[in-house]
Amino acid sequence: MPYEAAALRSRFPLTPGSPDVMNGIVIKGSPFSVINALAELGYRVICSTGEAEILWTLQRES
Image (cartoon, rainbow, N blue to C red):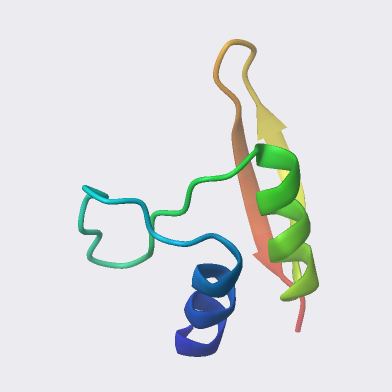
């Protein structure tokens, strides 16, 4: 995860006042660009649900 977090932070800089997260990171970007960045790190969307707010479930390819 440290490599992945560093890769995401280099692409999506932290915004001032971002909340602290125990087991993850907060990044700000369009859903399309965030999902594409995660795909480059080996993740893929396996499920999505919602209308006004969408929740994606991702799985890391091994």
